Amino acid sequence: MTRNNQFGRTMIEVLAVLAILGMVSATILQAIGRTFDKTKVSRICQQIVELQKNVNSRYAVDGTYKYMTVDDLVKERIIPTDMIGARGEIYHAYKSAVEINTADAGGHNGEDKAFRVVFKKIPRHVCMELLAINWQANNTTDLISITVGAKTYYWPDGNAARVSNDTLPLDMIKAGPLCTGDNMEIEWVFY
Image (cartoon, rainbow, N blue to C red; front, top):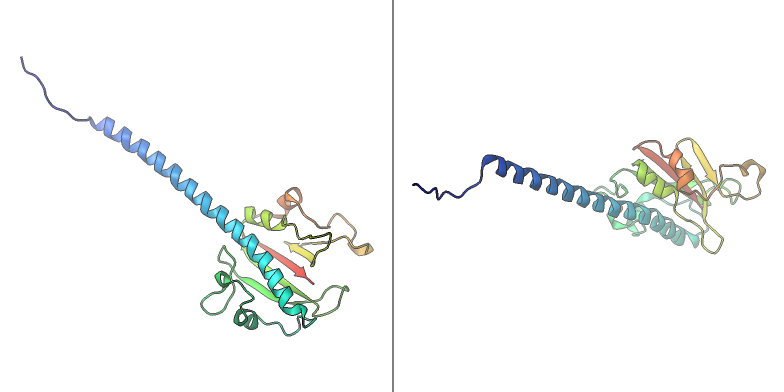
Protein backbone atom coordinates (compact mmCIF):
# COMPACT_ATOMS: atom_id res chain seq x y z
CA MET A 1 0.00 0.00 0.00
CA THR A 2 1.39 3.33 -1.01
CA ARG A 3 0.73 6.44 0.82
CA ASN A 4 0.70 9.76 -1.01
CA ASN A 5 2.32 12.44 1.14
CA GLN A 6 2.01 15.26 -1.36
CA PHE A 7 0.65 18.48 -0.05
CA GLY A 8 -0.37 21.15 -2.48
CA ARG A 9 -3.16 22.94 -4.18
CA THR A 10 -4.72 22.29 -7.47
CA MET A 11 -4.56 24.89 -10.19
CA ILE A 12 -8.29 25.60 -9.78
CA GLU A 13 -7.83 26.37 -6.07
CA VAL A 14 -4.97 28.75 -6.84
CA LEU A 15 -7.02 30.53 -9.53
CA ALA A 16 -9.96 30.86 -7.14
CA VAL A 17 -7.74 32.46 -4.49
CA LEU A 18 -6.24 34.84 -7.08
CA ALA A 19 -9.72 35.82 -8.31
CA ILE A 20 -10.84 36.60 -4.75
CA LEU A 21 -7.70 38.64 -4.11
CA GLY A 22 -8.28 40.53 -7.37
CA MET A 23 -11.85 41.42 -6.41
CA VAL A 24 -10.81 42.56 -2.94
CA SER A 25 -7.99 44.67 -4.43
CA ALA A 26 -10.35 46.28 -6.96
CA THR A 27 -12.84 47.13 -4.20
CA ILE A 28 -10.11 48.68 -2.07
CA LEU A 29 -8.79 50.72 -5.00
CA GLN A 30 -12.29 52.03 -5.76
CA ALA A 31 -12.75 53.03 -2.11
CA ILE A 32 -9.41 54.84 -2.13
CA GLY A 33 -10.35 56.62 -5.38
CA ARG A 34 -13.68 57.75 -3.91
CA THR A 35 -11.90 59.03 -0.80
CA PHE A 36 -9.44 61.06 -2.89
CA ASP A 37 -12.30 62.45 -4.98
CA LYS A 38 -14.21 63.51 -1.85
CA THR A 39 -11.07 65.29 -0.70
CA LYS A 40 -10.81 67.10 -4.05
CA VAL A 41 -14.51 68.08 -3.93
CA SER A 42 -14.01 69.47 -0.44
CA ARG A 43 -10.88 71.34 -1.53
CA ILE A 44 -12.44 72.93 -4.63
CA CYS A 45 -15.35 74.19 -2.49
CA GLN A 46 -12.83 75.65 -0.03
CA GLN A 47 -10.90 77.25 -2.89
CA ILE A 48 -13.81 79.35 -4.17
CA VAL A 49 -14.74 80.43 -0.65
CA GLU A 50 -11.10 81.35 0.15
CA LEU A 51 -10.72 83.24 -3.13
CA GLN A 52 -13.86 85.26 -2.45
CA LYS A 53 -12.83 86.14 1.10
CA ASN A 54 -9.20 86.89 0.28
CA VAL A 55 -9.89 89.04 -2.78
CA ASN A 56 -12.73 90.86 -1.04
CA SER A 57 -10.61 91.58 2.03
CA ARG A 58 -7.65 92.78 -0.04
CA TYR A 59 -9.65 95.20 -2.18
CA ALA A 60 -12.16 96.38 0.44
CA VAL A 61 -9.69 99.07 1.44
CA ASP A 62 -9.41 100.39 -2.15
CA GLY A 63 -13.16 100.37 -2.72
CA THR A 64 -12.60 99.17 -6.29
CA TYR A 65 -11.26 96.12 -8.09
CA LYS A 66 -10.18 98.27 -11.05
CA TYR A 67 -6.45 97.62 -10.65
CA MET A 68 -6.73 93.96 -9.69
CA THR A 69 -4.47 91.65 -11.70
CA VAL A 70 -3.77 87.96 -11.39
CA ASP A 71 -0.05 88.72 -11.07
CA ASP A 72 -0.73 90.97 -8.07
CA LEU A 73 -3.02 88.38 -6.52
CA VAL A 74 -0.28 85.77 -6.84
CA LYS A 75 2.51 88.09 -5.57
CA GLU A 76 0.45 89.23 -2.60
CA ARG A 77 -0.47 85.62 -1.76
CA ILE A 78 -4.16 86.31 -2.07
CA ILE A 79 -4.60 83.13 -4.10
CA PRO A 80 -4.07 79.88 -2.15
CA THR A 81 -0.67 78.40 -3.03
CA ASP A 82 -2.12 75.04 -4.13
CA MET A 83 -3.93 76.89 -6.93
CA ILE A 84 -0.86 78.52 -8.48
CA GLY A 85 0.86 76.82 -11.42
CA ALA A 86 4.56 76.93 -12.30
CA ARG A 87 4.16 80.01 -14.54
CA GLY A 88 1.72 81.90 -12.30
CA GLU A 89 -1.46 80.58 -13.90
CA ILE A 90 -4.32 79.60 -11.61
CA TYR A 91 -5.89 76.13 -11.39
CA HIS A 92 -8.61 74.65 -9.18
CA ALA A 93 -8.37 71.27 -7.41
CA TYR A 94 -9.38 69.41 -10.59
CA LYS A 95 -6.41 70.98 -12.43
CA SER A 96 -8.36 73.15 -14.86
CA ALA A 97 -8.12 76.90 -15.43
CA VAL A 98 -9.46 79.58 -13.12
CA GLU A 99 -10.08 83.17 -14.25
CA ILE A 100 -10.29 86.15 -11.91
CA ASN A 101 -10.97 89.69 -13.11
CA THR A 102 -13.06 92.79 -12.49
CA ALA A 103 -16.75 92.85 -13.27
CA ASP A 104 -19.64 95.28 -13.50
CA ALA A 105 -21.79 95.03 -10.40
CA GLY A 106 -24.88 95.24 -12.60
CA GLY A 107 -26.29 98.52 -11.37
CA HIS A 108 -25.56 97.76 -7.73
CA ASN A 109 -22.30 99.63 -7.41
CA GLY A 110 -21.14 100.20 -10.96
CA GLU A 111 -18.10 99.19 -12.95
CA ASP A 112 -15.05 97.80 -11.19
CA LYS A 113 -16.97 97.45 -7.93
CA ALA A 114 -17.25 93.69 -8.38
CA PHE A 115 -15.05 90.81 -9.43
CA ARG A 116 -15.72 87.51 -11.15
CA VAL A 117 -14.23 84.08 -10.66
CA VAL A 118 -14.63 81.38 -13.31
CA PHE A 119 -13.84 77.70 -12.73
CA LYS A 120 -13.54 75.73 -15.98
CA LYS A 121 -13.96 72.03 -16.78
CA ILE A 122 -15.82 71.06 -13.62
CA PRO A 123 -17.11 67.46 -13.35
CA ARG A 124 -20.89 67.13 -12.94
CA HIS A 125 -20.90 65.97 -9.31
CA VAL A 126 -18.50 68.78 -8.36
CA CYS A 127 -20.63 71.33 -10.22
CA MET A 128 -23.61 70.41 -8.06
CA GLU A 129 -21.57 70.80 -4.85
CA LEU A 130 -20.19 74.19 -5.94
CA LEU A 131 -23.63 75.52 -6.86
CA ALA A 132 -25.08 74.48 -3.51
CA ILE A 133 -22.54 76.40 -1.37
CA ASN A 134 -24.32 78.64 1.11
CA TRP A 135 -23.01 82.17 0.52
CA GLN A 136 -25.15 83.86 3.16
CA ALA A 137 -23.95 84.93 6.58
CA ASN A 138 -26.27 86.88 8.88
CA ASN A 139 -28.76 87.22 6.00
CA THR A 140 -26.23 89.09 3.85
CA THR A 141 -23.96 88.03 1.02
CA ASP A 142 -21.29 89.44 -1.27
CA LEU A 143 -22.39 87.13 -4.07
CA ILE A 144 -24.21 88.95 -6.89
CA SER A 145 -24.75 86.08 -9.31
CA ILE A 146 -23.80 82.58 -10.39
CA THR A 147 -23.74 81.58 -14.05
CA VAL A 148 -23.65 77.97 -15.13
CA GLY A 149 -24.06 77.08 -18.77
CA ALA A 150 -26.19 79.84 -20.26
CA LYS A 151 -28.23 80.44 -17.11
CA THR A 152 -27.53 83.17 -14.55
CA TYR A 153 -28.98 83.17 -11.05
CA TYR A 154 -29.27 86.32 -8.91
CA TRP A 155 -30.24 87.05 -5.34
CA PRO A 156 -33.81 88.36 -5.27
CA ASP A 157 -33.51 92.09 -4.69
CA GLY A 158 -36.89 93.43 -5.65
CA ASN A 159 -35.64 94.40 -9.11
CA ALA A 160 -38.45 93.33 -11.45
CA ALA A 161 -35.94 92.14 -14.05
CA ARG A 162 -34.47 89.74 -11.55
CA VAL A 163 -37.52 88.39 -9.78
CA SER A 164 -38.04 84.97 -11.29
CA ASN A 165 -37.31 81.30 -10.76
CA ASP A 166 -33.69 82.12 -11.54
CA THR A 167 -32.91 83.26 -8.02
CA LEU A 168 -30.35 82.24 -5.46
CA PRO A 169 -29.71 80.37 -3.28
CA LEU A 170 -29.41 77.15 -5.24
CA ASP A 171 -29.78 73.74 -3.68
CA MET A 172 -28.99 70.26 -5.01
CA ILE A 173 -32.47 69.96 -6.54
CA LYS A 174 -32.02 73.14 -8.62
CA ALA A 175 -28.33 72.42 -9.30
CA GLY A 176 -28.85 68.91 -10.65
CA PRO A 177 -30.42 69.83 -14.00
CA LEU A 178 -27.92 72.68 -14.50
CA CYS A 179 -24.89 70.41 -14.25
CA THR A 180 -25.32 68.40 -17.41
CA GLY A 181 -21.83 67.17 -18.22
CA ASP A 182 -18.30 66.68 -17.00
CA ASN A 183 -16.88 69.89 -18.49
CA MET A 184 -19.02 72.52 -16.80
CA GLU A 185 -18.03 76.16 -16.35
CA ILE A 186 -19.22 78.16 -13.36
CA GLU A 187 -18.91 81.93 -12.94
CA TRP A 188 -19.41 83.74 -9.64
CA VAL A 189 -19.68 87.53 -9.44
CA PHE A 190 -19.02 89.10 -6.04
CA TYR A 191 -19.13 92.65 -4.62
